[in-house]
Amino acid sequence: MAGMVIIGAGHAAGQAAASLRQEKYEGPITIIGDEPHIPYQRPPLSKQYLSGEQGLDKVYLRPEKFYADKDVTLKLGVTATRIDREAKTVELDNGEAIEYDKLILSTGSRPRMLNIEGSNLNGIHYLRTIADVDAIRGEMAAGKSLVIVGGGYIGLEVASVGVEQGLTVHVLDTNV
Ligand SMILES: Cc1cc2nc3c(=O)[nH]c(=O)nc-3n(C[C@H](O)[C@H](O)[C@H](O)COP(=O)(O)OP(=O)(O)OC[C@H]3O[C@@H](n4cnc5c(N)ncnc54)[C@H](O)[C@@H]3O)c2cc1C
Image (cartoon, rainbow, N blue to C red; front, side):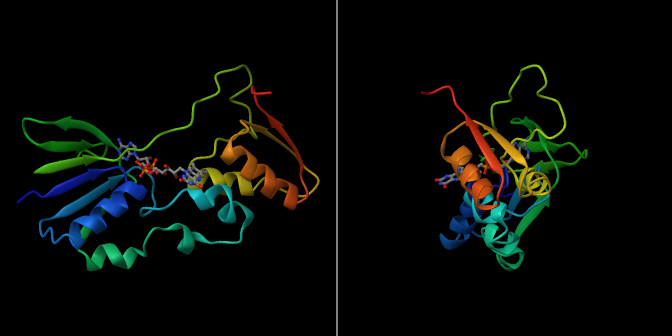
């Protein structure tokens, strides 16, 4: 039995695997994720993880042991590059092909890239992943100036952390 394969190792994937076991699914479950982390929740990234109040243990949906205990295989740091529906396989960028009976796509979303002159300069970050926040945190220091493009929830949460940490914060938004 090839079992259940889940592409994308975010919140949806972690919860899907947990729910399958809770509902007594007994076949193999494999989660494929391109980030090097076990499934995690993103809300703390722009709040307590950015401010340093919470560590990765609070960001991860469940401890790593959960997946071992529930017999869920994690393939992390690899990208699913092709699905062959005839052969029922998922191909990975490391050359592996994984068979599936059922496939779940939980590949989430990505920030819109800012395609303007200068958008590739140093000191410019997007905020979506743990790696993004680690890079941003490394550059946040009292007295520095922080410009945030996008004044939605995430932008304003980051602004709040920036102000608390003594940065001068500017929020740019097209809405007036
Ligand atoms: C900073 C931030 C703060 C947020 N705060 C809130 C909040 O306060 N409240 C709220 O309700 N929501 C919030 N959200 C939104 C919430 O986090 C998302 O709705 C949630 O992450 C969606 O989970 P997901 O598992 O569907 O997708 P994702 O979390 O995007 O996970 C998908 C994963 O799949 C991976 N992937 C994609 N393609 C492939 C591939 N081909 N091969 C392997 N892996 C792949 C991606 O890299 C990613 O790791 C926030 C989001 C962010 C970024």
